[in-house]
Image (tube, rainbow, N blue to C red; front, side, top):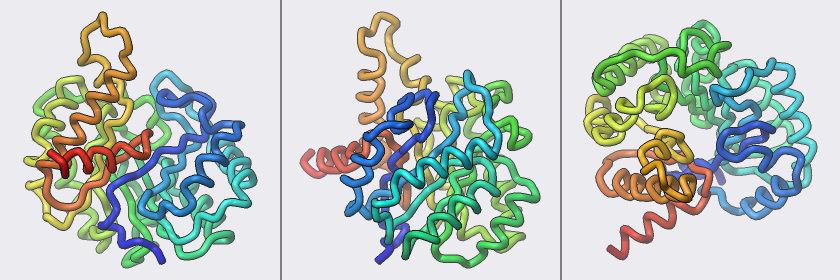
Length: 290
């Protein structure tokens, strides 16, 4: 049976890319993908977030045909793994790719829910058509991000689109305008908001949104779901001392401390996009014993 969406708190990242900034080639043409997914077959409390294109600014964008070719290779490799009865997220900024990935999964698996994890933050005709097609579908969610990317094809160049100013005020303005549009379309229930840390934001704006996230959340309905994705963000490393010996390791420790704060102070439904699948459960246990 598919878990109720609002009971879930963890989205695990699985990048099927050769040039991911966070975990290059970890799951690309390796047996680690199959081993990892087999170990997670019974973890239906974990949303699996599959991505086939890196949107790190140093990488070139790929075509939609290349994105689908990577998916097809991945899908063949996991043909003996049962991913039924769970929520699946596709990290793509192309609604057409999401439709393709979803349709292939539905051909093989049963009882799934699907999430369009759209990091672009773009509202256009493609998004409107997808959301209206999925209106009132209890097995669908879309993630809408806070960025200033002007068009989907420029998603990989997100750091060239910055706006100076109060990060909190800008975020509220961005989400309020989007919320109005989603309500007009009758699809507001299906949409999750994502502050989208690291994308088209200054270092200072990222930290402002972290420190005042509850203020941002309280500007909207308590029924709104939020995605928090801080795992392996470069601005966390920039906050450490230059002489730090293990920047990546210390940044992950900082990430864990931030999760403790989010989980102990934030009301309502939030879930966390992470590369370490156990980190949220580990933090929750720490909070229970503190």
